[in-house]
Image (cartoon, rainbow, N blue to C red; front, side, top):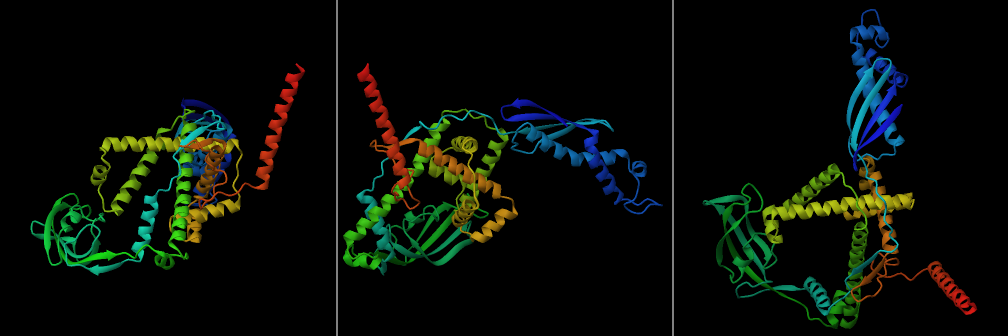
Length: 474
């Protein structure tokens, strides 16, 4: 077999493959055997029909087609390996020449992984915001804890923001009740939002026993986007009473004896969370800085596929939240063109980042062992709320394990470039990332790391002393 490559574009290649007939013969023999099992010829047992009889009965061309359908995929894969090409989609294959008993020639045009020079990543710098836990952050967290132990008490006054109400609700259009838009005795917190536009405004100032009607648009069902009349009746208004923020509450809500201890713990936990957020921002900033150093051609087919996938995910999330795209764009204060432009930029950045991380993983010769794969499977299962064993079975059955392996390799590549980079916060302090733990704590450097640092320091000092001696001799 001979193959040649023509570069159609930086991300698309055209393979021309010539296969001598002797390499087709095994597939041709297999085709004759297969067809012999499928036809009945008087005087011959099934499966024992000679090739020359098959040629007369069904035609030589049918046999050749069967053989070619088998041999072309095999030779295509061989040509990819021979020319060190990584395909990103299914090829467009065309048989361009067939000389019976002489030669088969075909072409395969396919999107391929782009080639580019990986930039240096040992001198990347990036900056992130300071880790700052404000008094407001702590107060908000403590208030959330108080709400868990709060009680509801009936009040004889109009409903206000934050109150809990019990309501009967009914939506109508042209006097007809909208199917699925009528509920009774539903509990709702005024100001929570996320239900029906205009509901919070309608409930504010309404007392128990009173009813109010307003016009809104439904975000789901057959009448999505259409105006309906909503009648809401308040049957109960309740005010949430929160426990006092004191030592007694600290003992009720935690293992601490005093409010001071609880507050310190809350502040520490918030700090660990913000440290993790800072680390995520650092990874993004370092990767973005490295991407600015390289121009990576992106295959249109890959970008289009990812765009369609992202759009579908967004539409599904909006549908689950009972929100239309129009409402989402209004809330985000975006036009559809701005949304599409932003989505395409994020997709292109993500695809480019994948190509870059794959090349770095290849350069660093990273591998994945069974333990790392098992840990990754468990994490992915937890993130999706699935049983780890069922998740693993699904991944194996649908051949998604190579994708998971690639995710692990990309994670290692990203960790490498982040640990090689210099990251500072807004105050100019070094951001510790290498020893950051999943819970947001900073692990003390190991003895091996400390020994390496001491050795490096000794080498620097020795070099400086040598330089001083040379200067003195001069």
